[in-house]
Structures are given as C-alpha cells and as structure tokens.
Amino acid sequence: MQLRELQTFELVAQERNMTRVAVKMSKSVMAVSKQIANLEQSVGQALFIRTRRELKLTEYGREFLKRCTALNNQHRQLQQWVRSTEFEVSGEIRILTQANEVITENFTPWIGEFLRQFPLLNVVFDVKESLVDIAQDEYDVYWGVGSYLGDRFTGLKRRSLYNERYGIFASPDYLSTKGIPNTPDDLDTHDVIGYLYNEPSNVLVLQALTGEVIHKTLNSRVKAVAGMIECAQSGLGLINALPKAKQIENAIADGSLVPVMEDYWWDRAEAFIYYHQTVVVEPKVRAFIDFFLNKRPQW
Image 1 (spheres, rainbow, N blue to C red):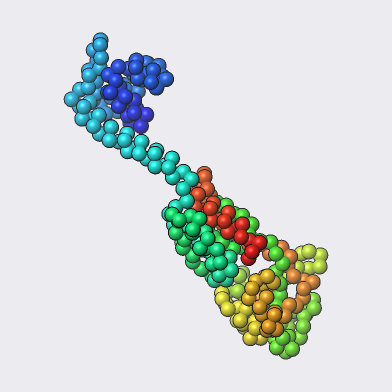
Image 2: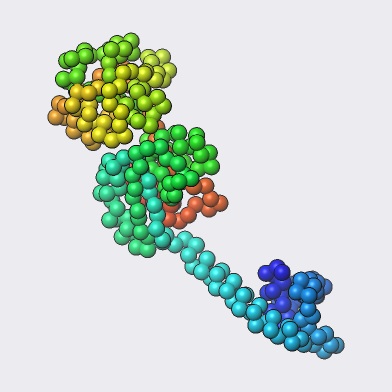
C-alpha cells in the first residue's frame, strides 16, 4: 500500500465519485481508478460497490476507511509539525572538545547570550582528551580537533577553526640545565613532554627553514593527555603549544616559560569543527557553529 493510494481512497470515499476526485487532484479519471484498483489488489478485498450513479463503500471498505482516515490524519499532523519546526532551533546539542580550556575560553563567556538567543535549546559540553571515535562518542559537534578525525571518518563535514603557528616552549630552569636549542640538530640531547595519543607520543613538531614539516622524536620522561604546560613549567621538557593560548601567554608573562627556536615553529597548525554529514544541516548545529565562530575575534 502506498500513502498516495490511501489519500486517494479517502477522497473517493468522501466524494463517492472518481471524476470529482480527479478534478480535485488534477489527475485523469483513469489514474484515480488505477490507484483504487491497486489498493484493492493490495488488501485483497473490494472497497467499493460500483453503480452507474455513485460508488458505495463495502462493509470492509467502511472499516478500512476508519483506519485509513486515522493514518492520513497522522500524516497530515506530521507534515504540519515538520513545517512548524523546519527552522526551529530546539532540543539538545552535544559538544565534544579535547581540552577544558576550549570550553572556558571559547564557550563559557558567551554561553548565556547563546541560550537567551535560542531558549528552546539545551547544551551539553564534554571533554575527551584521548582520540575521538565517532562510533563510540555520539556528539553533534566535535570542536577544535586536528585533521586526524577527518582522515579517519571521511563522512564527517568540517570547517576550519584556526590555522596558526605551533610554538615550542620550555622553562628557564630546563634550558639552564639542557642548554638552549637553536637548530633541529641541537634537540638530540633534549626531552619532550609527550602527548600520549600522538603516534609516536614522543614527537616535537617543527618546520624546516625550507617549509618542510619535521617530526622530531626525542627522549620523553613524561607522557600525558593533560597538564603538559604545568609539566613544562616544572622543567620536565619542551612542549608544543599555541602561542595565543591564554595559559601560554600567562606563563610567558610570569616568566615560567620562554619561547625557543622561533625560526622553526610550524606555521600551519590547523584545527577544525567537525559535524555529521546530513542532507540538510540540523538547525541547532548550524546555529551553534555560526554563533561561536562569530565570536572568534573575541577569543
């Protein structure tokens, strides 16, 4: 049974005349008659008694009409609901990041304004510092994640969040002990505070003067997914970090960290906003991304 056949049947049952139904539906009488015949064949029962003057419902047809009308009403209600919510930003949106700082620096200052603008929407923020797996991590938006997520799950859509230099930093105490590196070759005797989920985890990212990206593997006494800046401030090794990160700016301001090898900083570190590919982007996802990207100059 096709929905259009049920809708046609309901009209014919009301009008008891296929010609009038054909006019209302802008179809030929033959097309209307064929739909009714197909429906009768599908249910295996006669729905109408055909006379010269009008169509009369059979006993089975009268019972079938009750159920058909209820189903068609549900469909009409569904259509009305879809139209009323077509552009409505509502429900719950779930956001996953890989650092608490993303929430405190990118979202917290403006979340009140966002929720006032979209009063029917609730927001859930979560942090996962290990690799993201969309098969297990069911979120609407993955914010501030590197290119690996798009490489692993090619069905995701993404927008660029930032493309910035990726700095190298160390504490003055560490540099007084290990020396100040000036070139990649100088790093052979140095330690790196490794990010546990990098492959390998003991890598320091640099950029050669020719523009080539260098992944330098160093000795690593500490590997972690959080607290890496604090470890660097304690003199445990070199770290990669974004110079504009507030924690790095504060550490430089108070003298607990200093930048090193600035000529070899990677100048194309990029992070993305990922979201699921759908025929039409969900209004709540579009609203969230557009709102917070518009706040980017204030981060």
